[in-house]
Image 1 (cartoon, helix red, strand yellow):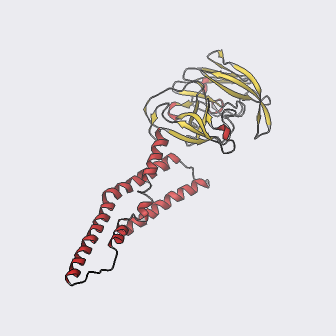
Image 2 (cartoon, one colour):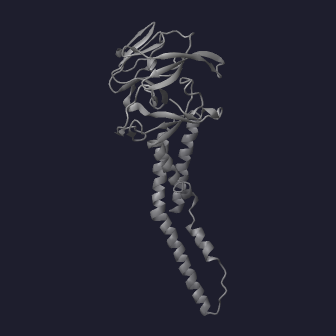
Image 3 (cartoon, one colour):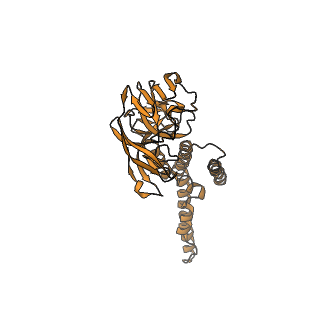
Length: 325
């Protein structure tokens, strides 16, 4: 049986390694949440089998060896032989030791289950891949996302168990990209259900009220080596910075077809949208360099992942570490 388990485990580990390799080289579309869930289940099964079957079996074998050694020594003593070769304790240790296939499964379960629980229900790390949230978030910022702020959800299937806070205007939120839910996006909440959001001539208006926008010194983007006009905007209860590119037109080119598109009116000046119930309107802080709700529509509540709140590392600029709005 142990030989069969060793072979089965080798196949299971090879499948995990093969999936990870295919994902790394772009041969398949990876799903880390699903991979971590499966790893938790598989290692959990091995951990239970080790605790309640394999480990007791090894202890029984070690105890039988000890009894056999005691009996053998007693029989030899009767014959006047008191010096016996062999280290019984060393042999017992080898019997009790985990085989490699349990060490790489049951042995990893405590670490994997802690990571799974923390990532699924508390905080999840993300890496910023693009410049759509400059100047708030820079490319290669490593951020933390609060997974319980908007309610606790089941991992993988993302079904909400219970509510907490509702997204507010100004929140920086991670969500599953509506056209392709396997991708995670990060943008700022601009419109909540029922809002009429207007972005005309690069000026934001919500429910007919212009959003406060104050000019700041120009922002120098070290990646593009260009300056951009920088402003401070007050959205909801939050102050944040945004960028505008005077060379980009106000109209929205190349929009997708999306649910509730009839709620939006596009013109040469920009777009006006009525946010449907259970949905949110998202925009990047780098307003003229962000693929957001203006192009692909509203984010349904079921797509919410969590609230971004902290940069925990940027290897190129340690000064980036800290909280943000």
